[in-house]
Amino acid sequence: MSFKLGLLASHEGTNVQSIIDGCQSNVIRAVPSVVISNNSQSGVLQRAKKANIPNYHVSASQFNNQHNLDTAILKILQTHDVNLVILAGYMKKLGDQVLNIYKGNILNIHPSILPKFGGKGMYGDKVHQAVLNSGDKKTGVTIHVVTKNYDEGPIIARTEITLAEDETIDSLKQKVQKKEHKLYVETLRKITFGELTL
Image (cartoon, rainbow, N blue to C red):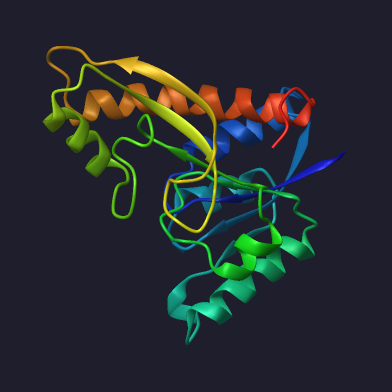
């Protein structure tokens, strides 16, 4: 099977960059077919332009309802023959059409060991702060299949991080990001080389 990736992100897109690099170096046997962001000023759109990957700004402000937004995202994914959707710091919930058409073929990465510190409103620094507040000695990164409910789909990969005594949000964020980049690339390598089935 030939994998064509649809990459969705809201901000800097460092995970997307790792995946693009992985595809270009044949560590991942896939083509990054399209990049979509809900943020017109996002770094991820610049990364896509630099890599000559078709890229689109698609946000709720451009449409009068969620259904039309969902339809627009679905049309872009289908136009670019995407068969695996990758959420990499995408801060919006996908609509029912995309979820149904790509059921079982949408992945998300979350900056904790799910089910801990997951769910609606739990993203980015909010997760790191909750981890620090909890007193837990470990956290990590989880990759899961996306379903209707936030962070509840089947888990396909995860890795742990041990917290330092003097851990801060910034230091934890850096540790988590490094692990995210490695885990996403390695997981996509396994999927695209047939070592892991979704």
